[in-house]
Amino acid sequence: MVDRRRLLVILFLLHLLVCSESHSFKHFHRKKKINGPIKTLVVLVMENRSFDHILGWLKSTRPDIDGLTGKESNRLSVSDPDSPEVFVSDDALFIDSDPGHSFQAIREQIFGSENVSATSALMNGFAQQAASMGEDMPRTVMSGFKPEVLPVTTALANEFAVFDRWFASVPSSTQPNRFYVHSATSHGCQSNVRKDLIHGFPQKTIFDSLEENGLSFGIYYQNIPATLFLKSLRKLKHTIKFHSYKLKFKLHAMLGRLPNYVVLEQRYFDVNLLPANDDHPSHDVALGQKFVKEVYETLRKSPQWNETALLITYDEHGGFYDHVPTPVSGVPNPDGILGPDPFYFRFDRLGVRVPTILISPWIDKGSVIHEPSGPTKYSQFEHSSIPATVKKLFNLKSNFLTKRDAWAGTFENYFYLRDSPRIDCPEKLPEVTTSLRPWGPKEDKSLSEFQLELIQLAAQLNGDHVLNTYPNMGKSMTVAEANRYAEDAVARFLEAGRAALRAGANESAIVTMRPSLTSRITGGVYGSQVQSH
Ligand SMILES: *[C@@H]1O[C@H](CO)[C@@H](O)[C@H](O)[C@H]1NC(C)=O
Ligand SMILES: *[C@@H]1O[C@H](CO)[C@@H](O)[C@H](O)[C@H]1NC(C)=O
Ligand SMILES: *[C@@H]1O[C@H](CO)[C@@H](O)[C@H](O)[C@H]1NC(C)=O
Ligand SMILES: *[C@@H]1O[C@H](CO)[C@@H](O)[C@H](O)[C@H]1NC(C)=O
Image (tube, rainbow, N blue to C red; front, side, top):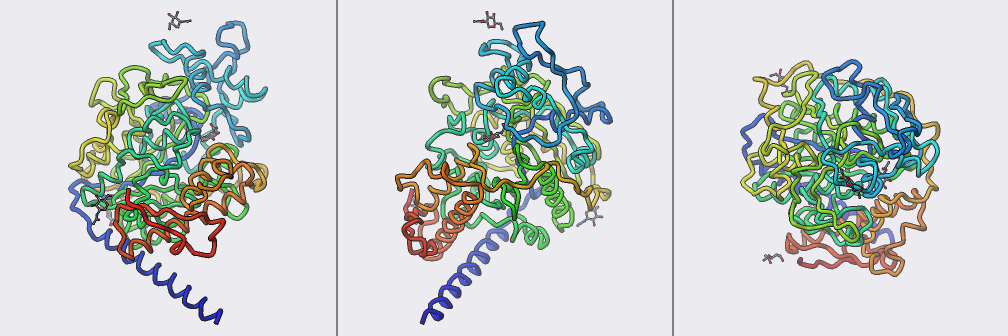
């Protein structure tokens, strides 16, 4: 009896799997004709490193890149010209502690004080701000990697194009910046700590524009997709656009079935079996290198390679020094929304410069892309340049998402400089053999702020947000527990979505789950309820 029931469940799950597959492939076939050379843009956003920290020292062999000379420094106390001067160094390897990157900390890094009225940012408060966090921090934040320590990034930078004027969209932390990548606004979100991160952010996204224009997209995630913070992506019709990176990315690339717009999400949790690969301190940057290598080599092998571009950027600078002044003038507020009390930030200046690399057989070897030439005289490359370029690259009829992507520089013209794709792009990137971290993952660690938010998101997805342990459930979890919890929540949510879709629910509805802690065995479908929004 028990076995029979089990068999039925397995058959049902198998059925779900087959249906979701055929359903998602139907979308791939719906391809609209694109005239330009690029038919697939792949976006990968790494975590928390400034341009100078990752690419600054490449200047020694690539003088055309605006990197470090070794003369750059910050005083430990901005207001005291006699205080010790901390110079940039090239000895970054492994960074255990997490430098400051709150709104206030970044303000101090950029302006040297709370006074933001300077017309040009001085970039002189990094060491001072870091000193308030620990004795070794000033040296840490002024450090950068030798190019040979990051063999994959260095190879890609030398082989394709480096942007040396690409800024974070907001002088603040991860979430607001990730929102700009997908929607050219953070809808007023200025830091990570905001309760309604979990209810889903309501703004229109580039995914909606793509859909309106009959183009396909896919999100390949590892433990939990942070893109699910966006409400639009929780709709039933979009739940089929989420794929397991491990099971599907290589497969779709090999079959030539990658959609027009691809977002890759890395592992944000550091566990023994699968250590984090997002480059976030204290994670091992060597694993980030391996991940980027795998992504590149997968695309390079794909039959779609000749029509593909890969953009790799970093969400924010993570507290690390950068010498290029952060743009403070002519930056439009995207949508009229101000940040919360007490700063009421107007979203009218950018964040610190971050490393960004553009990879495609249509890009000449060793290119450097400096400032954009428009659309306004103040326009810059920043994360909103991604949706802005998608609109131009694929000739979308939809309007710009906000005033910010209408303003941001775009890079589609760099794909039109050649008559044919290159045939000399490397098939393999250098091996990354040595770990940059002296130890493995610490599974028993408590969660970082970003990880706590991912757990809040997971709780929203699986219905646990109605429990009174919410929003603090992540506080009692170790990294290993959190990873299991998040993966389980995502699996249940996506599975329930597919089932509801098959049962004929409205495609724009969002599944609301009942708490998993009380109905764990339901496998999703039975414990869920579909609501139209
Ligand atoms: C802030 O800086 C500006 C110059 O950038 C200066 O004119 C002004 O006096 C400063 N304000 C305060 C309160 O220090
Ligand atoms: C890509 O284009 C190059 C140059 O035209 C050609 O030699 C190569 O076979 C193409 N590769 C694929 C996978 O279509
Ligand atoms: C990176 O971003 C996350 C999320 O904002 C944050 O929790 C973490 O502390 C940041 N790390 C650094 C180095 O700024
Ligand atoms: C589906 O839901 C949307 C949004 O609530 C609504 O506008 C639409 O009419 C619904 N479609 C159907 C077929 O019920």
